[in-house]
View 1 (tube, rainbow, N blue to C red):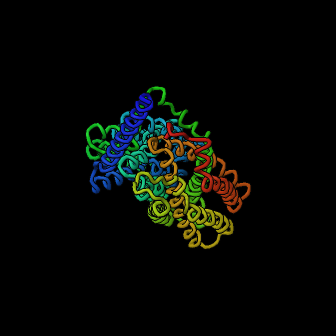
View 2 (cartoon, one colour; view 1 turned 180 degrees about the vertical axis):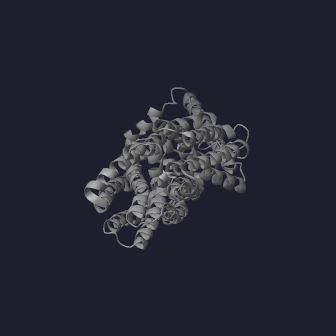
View 3 (cartoon, rainbow, N blue to C red; view 1 turned 60 degrees about the vertical axis):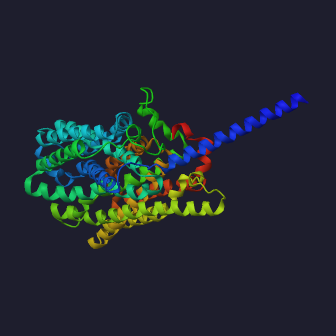
Length: 483
């Protein structure tokens, strides 16, 4: 009897201890949740996003700015069309590889040093391009230029994740993606008039000056945002803080290997087909504007404004829509559960994909219409209208896909963005090289139709993620240790 009473007393003490521990844990969680997600003020965060978006504009701007002058460059360097095309392909391949290295470095030493170092490298590469006297020198300088400009392609998303919680991240990403998406539109516009009036070398001198300005902003204006580094000096919520990386973890091949997870592989496939089509369209348009519609080099660049305006509307509205979708899912879950704790309500990452079909349907329809309008040399006004919808649809879809991957990998946002940049840029390099052959053999209409069906296939496969993504992640990963 005495033993029974003793055991009962022990069990009661254990229960009380467990209850106290749970209460203490709950109080600690409540205390943590009362802390700000980021210590930066609202104005400071907007400033950070604007500088990041402006820096993110550099890579696609540098890639596209000298397209209108490419014939002049070919003649000036006494090379062939296939030879000069390698200045584009080499840039895009480097743009695929280097963000993987930059994203790992940004997670190790912070965002600010990466921005400063990358802009220094970009500026040097731009000066090298302006001074090039041979095709080999220009290709080498373009690789250096791409290596420097591509850092923000991955680190930028990490910066947004550093300062904005999940519920506000979509809107901020919408502003950030304006830079990478507007580059292919603004590049030919700016470069067309500079190349026409001042010569192709001044295209690169202007880029060098711009790189110098961004270097100064990175050094003296942009603050460090990395959550692990910031948490050492400021009180912020202990969430989405990446662990310190060992030398073994700093392996880009491990990041690329995330495609072994079905949700990542299917997302990357759609990203690649979508961006490859968009990028090929952007590089091919000067051929149509100047060769078919007889526009000057400057006027050809001006035509890119239509897709640029579409990108602005698609990016800003797409980001806002994904945030609204998360808010709607939260309200639905709050109504369906008895939990009063906001942090106990888990919204699946796939909630961001709910409106993706709107943007990508718009994009695909505009692509196939554009191809056949150019094939039959129909009204230029019609081509410009569908270019607007190509830009809007592309930017809108980018918000859903990019935000989804960041939600799946909240502590590896820069690295997963580097991975998606790798796959989409790699495919863009391939399809850009293939397009001249496609165009010569099957024409504009069927070339665009091929790209339409490739994107359609990726979209259909992506529906598995939209409707079964959460189950796929639970069964096949990624697991919590990789998030």
